[in-house]
Length: 393
Image (cartoon, rainbow, N blue to C red; front, side):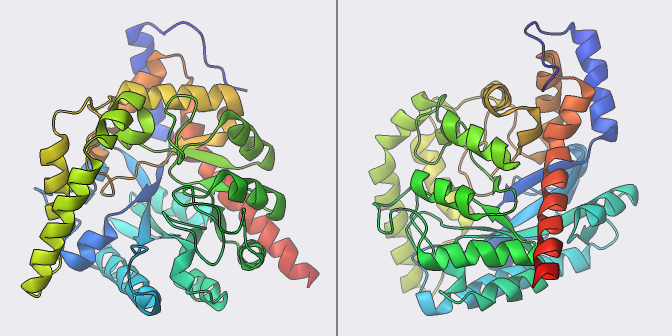
């Protein structure tokens, strides 16, 4: 269990704990959507004046040790072209790592992350966001794995061939038969099963089906913000019993009911203006960029009550109290969200969150687990299950 205290630490003691944690911990973020900028906007990750939440300078300032880049393809993308788009995103990410190999390196295992960290490099990993990206063909799991993908989110915002999404009406009432086969195949490969975005029923089916610990790569606590994308306390406990890890999402709409409810009132306006801008871009033979879409959202939502990094710490606190210190991590959703919390606007601000957690009474050991140690443990356990499964065949 956590050594978290009920009383805040004196600022001098907390500061020392934070400094020690930042010097020893491998900070792992399990979800950022930056690859679409690599592909669609020719974004160079080393840009010193980057408008994005993730850049090499920002990661260095934030003491980041590893980033899982999301290979995300919109659920509305032509079904027959989903794999092609995913491969383009993987290739664009590979090009960034190759271009900046002096400071970045691809990692496939927990050992790789630790080795790269010891070399002073940031480890880059991949996660496919949405089972629709295999186009119903389980062999694509093997292909993605060989290309470096180390987790797949079973669904995104709509149901797919594998199961039901939290953003859609029940279709399968949980995992589909193919979804169960996908989980088994991922276990055999050593690919982590990610349950962010799935419906509650799909979550419980995945827990019952998987022989390996699961992850929620970017989910927060429903007890603090009543969004269907968030996890209930019972789900957090079930994930902990499974041995998995819940990586807290920084999106304001998953942190604060005040923001979520205010945002709901302008969602239709955002959608209408974004659709109109997309249509106008298409007439010109262009595609609306991520930054252009974000600009529309920010203009409309600029006066909403954006939560702060303290709210992120509240979700971490809650997840630790419910599931235990060994089952909580960080899943920012940077570059996939229009606003980030005040004080945690990009990767460079991570030390502020570490300081806040230390102030709340987390020990250096606690912080090392939350910042990345728990994810490393799950990666090793998933790898062990894969070896045992393969040996038994």
